[in-house]
Image (cartoon, rainbow over all chains, first blue to last red; front, side, top):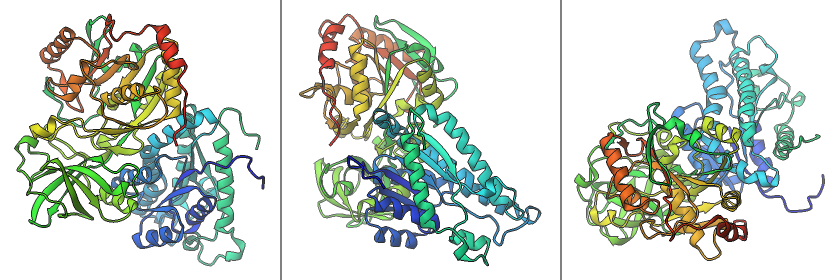
Amino acid sequence: MNTPLTPRTPLRVAVTGGTSGLGLALVEAFAARGDAVAFVARHGDAVAKVARRIAGSHGIVGDIARKDDAHAIALQVGAALGSLDVLVNNASSLGPVPLALLADTECEDFEAALATNLVGPFRLTKALLGLLAGAAREGAAVGTRPVVLNVSSDAAVTPYAGWGAYGASKAALAHLSRIWNEELGPHGIAVVAVDPGDMDTPLHALAVPDADPATLKRPGDAAREIVARIDRERAAAGARDPA
Amino acid sequence: MKAATLPVQRPRDARLLVVDADGRLAAHERADLPELLAAGDLVVANDAATLPASLSGRHLPSGATIELRLAGRTAAGAPDEAQRFSAVVFGAGDFRMRTEDRPVPPPLAPGDRLDLGPLEAEVLRTLGHPRLVEVRFAGDADAVHAGIARHGRPVQYAHLAEPLALWDVWTRIAGPPVAFEPPSAGFVLDWKFLDALRRRGIGFATLTHAAGLSSTGDPVLDARLPFDEPYRLPASTVTATCAAKARGARVVAIGTTVARALEHAAARPGGLHAGSGIATNRLGRASRVQVVDVLVSGTHEPGTSHHELLRAFVGERTLARIDAALEDGAWRTHEFGDSVWIERERPQPRWNLNTATLARRFGQVRTTLPA
């Protein structure tokens, strides 16, 4: 790894679904390099535990699937960080557990997957857009831009039988990301969807209970790749990053 | 004027009273706003998000029901900055009752404990008025913000029938949650408007100004409004503002908070520079306006501090004509009402610096980064 010539300015980062799996690994990865991290999760006990363990992190209790929580979460992100350079919409719902064929999927389960995987990230991005836009205006002079990274999946591209609610919601999230990026790009905000690969996480265990963890990517490795991708996207203002 | 009673930020039929630099009045649709701007102009808005600053609960020594309306931060820079606020205290009731009709709270004394849902607070002192107190919340900063986010309601007044949600009072550009009431002139903004500015070469910049309470219902307290309001001026905004002034372009302030912050910052020793400040100024007839050329604002009734501020931009006679036009045309007032575009009146030799003077004044200003 290159040694930076000047000290890196710490980023202000928000991560949803930050108490387990990839989200927790992201909170750890950002915090380890000195970034200020606010993370969101539903269960107060788990949030408090992670916030205590990871120095300088800010735990926020909220459910991104609930309309009423979006602005309350955004308020706490803004109060904790002051501005926002990176938003990772990571919290995901698998839909029906165990996985179900679409024809066997209850409408309520389908709607719940959309609420968490699509509508939630839309609402939270919208509620945090003012902070991101402020960071974009301030970053323009130094060639950096804020990044919204939506965690997607290969199920967004490949139609796996049994993954209907999850796959359809992630496909919509990926397309939402492309349209946001078209609309917000001129204002200096990048929006990308990234497939982190199959990881050894609680969500994967719910989906494929008999998977051999040894064959799965470790969340920490996926988190490092995502942090690197975010750094590239941040620097890609103006001239395209060759990487 | 009549009250705008529905919480719609951008009603399709919103109107804009345009007052040009010669004091001529013209009624426009508010949708015409982009066409009033010219390439090179700079629009400056307040990107403060609004806290749900109304906290209901109980005054524990008396058991009385109270409502606390947070009004300001009292300990900037102190270790317990996030916990300490000034607040106006009301007795029982809610926003549906006019503030001037609200029962007074029980007598408040230092050490009194307040039970406010998930939040606990202690009265530290009264601030020159029995209903204006400094309070300190228990818990760390994150816990205080979580409590306010969960329990607080947007401050609102009796002209609106329904309770407001946070999204009703956040502008499309709302960012740092520091305002106690919405910087409502910013309700005119949406992303389509920002796209139009970009396409047409009109600059857009923001500052963050902690807009405070607009009314308390108590004449003695109301006479003290606006309270001191902290603001933050980003380096990019200072650069854009100085460049606009240097080339003789107009600086268009979206809202009185923007005008107050920019003029306060420009009047400091060394002039406009990036960073934080506390606006203690009160713009009015005697003010020397240095930065803002156009004020876009809601319509305000005579007697309010917002209305007084207009005197910094127009003379007595023009203001009287504005008031009459708004009254005769039944324009809608309050935060969800119609808007005015008021260009600084000329000629006013006392205020009117020529372009060369401005270029000298602003061209030399250093842009310093916030600490």
